[in-house]
Length: 167
Image (tube, rainbow, N blue to C red; front, side):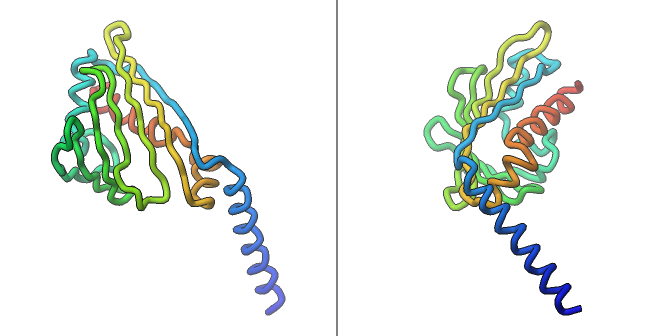
């Protein structure tokens, strides 16, 4: 029976080593994108993106937002939710049409920014999110790239927004 435990432990250690090796071979930096048409005009969608204090009303998994204030043109805030506590900086780069949301915590094993672009699309608004991110930890890199997908959070954000707009 002891040999079975040794073989199981060795197998698990080998699996973890293999996952870490694959993660180390994956690039640290990545780019991903997702888009969806929202059932609202661009001005309403832009107001929703910019009103970070209202994120808990429509974003699944965000329990509360702690406003930290402004740093120049950027709004600094902390999201408390199912993914833990994450600090962000949101900048409106082009009035009502382009925003940049940046993770504002250098201690995290991941980081980067989203560019959120809005464009009219018939009666609604095309929302396109481009992620320029990185994952330092090789185990997280493996999970993010090969299990969850780098676009998972963007797709969830877009689906939450559509529901929040009644779509």
